[in-house]
Length: 396
Picture 1 (tube, rainbow, N blue to C red):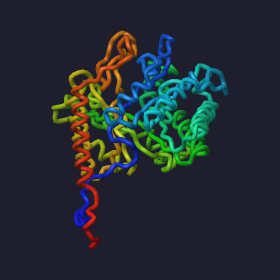
Picture 2 (cartoon, rainbow, N blue to C red; picture 1 turned 30 degrees about the vertical axis):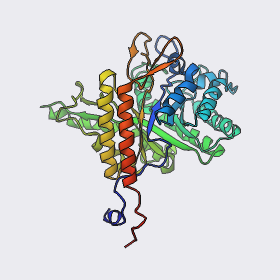
Picture 3 (tube, rainbow, N blue to C red; picture 1 turned 60 degrees about the vertical axis):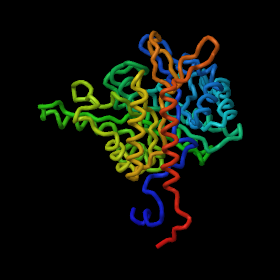
Picture 4 (cartoon, one colour; picture 1 turned 45 degrees about the horizontal axis):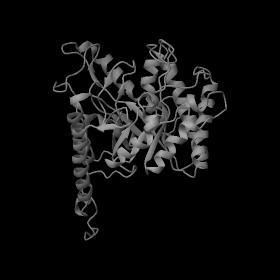
């Protein structure tokens, strides 16, 4: 560190992977719920129709890296038969707006003809992933960014333990997690066989869990549950269960999903933000980075309503402090970036930078958050410029 200072270089980490540090993510969930109804947030939010407008609106805010989704159930309506129309319209819209997209290949949903519990699922998903990469290559584009399977830990819990979403299982979360890790590794291999310059994002929720005050007997159980947040990344990189085939090179960019409700007391309620038990986000980021030494993207963050601005300010300040401490943070993604009705379809959730579409197909801009992001963009630019090498400095 002292050598960096002597050479005129600020100790702040300099992000370099993505086009823009501030990013926007369009929710692309496609899971089937308990009532048998399939969710398609890209359609329900209006993003399917407004993709070009949505991308242009983000580009106007200097947000040129975006998380979006490839809807497997629409592309492969029957085994081995692909219809690319739903994907290519968005892909071309992104190209026209000069955006860099991180494509989710499986965001909590898969085609009805796929049985996730069968061994064949791994090969089916890998074949689909390779086909997506090949389609992009045929369109003349390589070096793309992919999230093979989003938030495996959450999917294992919601779909494997509590039967909330497909595959609607109970007490099978561990088995579902292992299956999704196998599929992730196979998908990465399939994509790399087509495009060896592709990059991969592995988003998982990060949490902090405390034993309730005055109940130290719960500390061991609370810590065991907290440490479970690392299971998926450990499997992917081969730290645990190497028989799955994980290796360090499979863990490329770590995605951090973090919201105001990601800290709680074991078998209790949320830890208030001003509670002494609330763990600073800097400490969480440091722990993840020191565990894996891979670049981090805050792949999903945001808050509802009036909390949007103070939450984004907190996340940014914590990231800046972490970057000054050498943690490799590559960006912050507001997720979801556009409002839509809740998964029940009954309630409008005001959480995005972009509002619900009106009757004319236009989205309002939530100005307070836009101004906050603009201020942060200016500050980040200043910090990065201060961190450039001094051309007059000579090596010691």
